[in-house]
Image 1 (tube, rainbow, N blue to C red):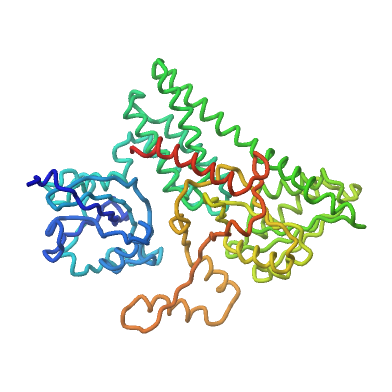
Image 2: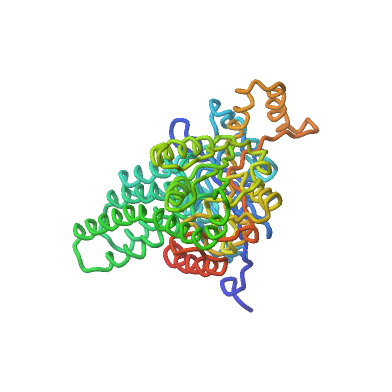
Length: 527
């Protein structure tokens, strides 16, 4: 008969969600599991549960949190996620794949109720706060196996020196709070934050140092703005490959640090070249696919629909227009609610046009702003819809600002001859995975409600109160205000990917995605 250690273990993927309070001393809530649960009864644990077969880890974390504590997005925010890891426990016949998360309780100023919002269910006997120092020995504490490992993966700075920790926290905070920059700019911010971390990391540049540095890069990717993180991931993968060569050299610590920081500066600087190369690719595309037809008309004009804010698209349009023998530029801009980035984009285009093209240039700009709901009206007589990209899936679908899909569908219906082009760096291509498992970002509904309140709309207060009351079980209705920033445009609706290497098709995108997967496994797989 096989021993318990030799017996085949059942593989189980679970979430491990810690709840923290940042009011005063940082503390974590641990829950004592009741005797009714089948595994690890009476042990202290975070909120845990299995991940469904068609469920993402993030979705499972939110579901378990609501089921076991009643907490929702109104009471907590997802603050961090940790690198998943695996361990075996023959005593319960399981091989666990743990997906750690850290949720932060919202304060009263943020619309939360603090710890009063935590209401435990039958799976727990009690709960209480614990400081980080007390969660170090599961046996003495009475915790579930590897409790400390799970916590350290979301509170990773505990094992870093203070100055490097502060640099990492500051970088993640800047990325999380930036809702104006595009992913190109966000990636540059992430690289600069990583440079600060590398400059502050202490100790010999050995295997442990290299692991800590790679983990810092992973957290800047995952816990900054993951919904815009494909570019950040690719930038880090290229950087880490170059760093690895320096680390393997027979140099003293000072020389290695100097070379590493010089390398980082080089990677940050060379990012300035990408928009220029995309611009050249777009110009080549128009020369071949647009100009021959346009020149045959009496009054050549280039009609483009854009939205949100993209410095790459703004600069590309005006620079390419300057190079073409086309006198008229017709730009339609959707306002891009709730933050109305399209308005800022239109203002920026107008200012740049006034500088670049004086009245004597004989160049004409027709700039029109449209509401998001009038995308179909804005599509009449259109030549191109230009999309940026926050992420490109391995199948060629594109994640971009919400409103992208309606705009594309409108253009395809109203003006079937128009083309949908994605202007983006190749670094936006993500590793292969199901598109339903790509990160989704739900943002503060107050951004949407604020527009209504500012506009003096009647009935807004009724809806706001209804949303609060519907969190209770006693009512028979729910009210929600959704504020998703991103949505997917399917690959079949896209006519070309204009990038620094030219204009590509979905096959080339798939090849790039495979390369991303191989490098991701190499530099982050063993963490």
